[in-house]
Image: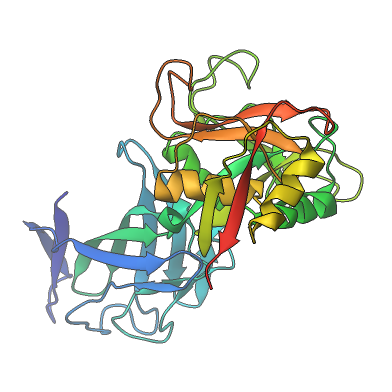
Length: 341
């Protein structure tokens, strides 16, 4: 992109005339921000002459450019005392110094993963027009946790929002945010059941579009049902488990156990029966791999596979879910969890 610089020549006897020349684009600036924090995107004229516009001041326009650069998303526009923000940037993007004669920098509050990308700041002043390109990189920290879908015994779509929050907490996790789900989708999470998120919306991630999951022609993405009634609406939930302070392990036993025997066996080993969030964390963050189905604290039977192989999740790394089986059935072992001292 080339920037247009117009120099206006003023004469006492002749009408003002103008000529324009193309200047090289500004140096690209890269800015890093933490998820949920505030960040300043810098954009500033090196010189400014208010003679031409009096008290009008800078005319500023910020846009966010799409990845394929075929379209842009308006962020903020400002001229004199008139300022406007657009779409999802409304009420969280501001000029850093709205009274400045040369500073068009903006502050973005509550930074999200979606804010990542390229921004263009265009300034029009009396003597100088400038376009500054800024790259914003958002560091979400999701590498220190894992998002997983969850539904309790009784089947899918049985949780209102309060129940969803409680369900995650019982599994040593918390209800996931949109940004956490979005990055998990980027990392390959594909799940066709809609679940609650922390902002009260109901969404689900699709990496392989198909008819039963929003349509085969809709493209991959995070499908959004929008905000639903937190009290009466029923869905699953997406939970986020952080890195656990302890270790999960398979308890070697001479015989298969009922659920109640499994709970007691872990207690006898000075541990507790492992929770779903603890298994996901060990699987994702520690590479835990075990091809034995075992009881977990919610009464489900699962096993973690980080190295896909025949008879043990042959096509993908995953926490395999057997189901919520009869708790009196002696068909499974148990995974225990021992916290760090």
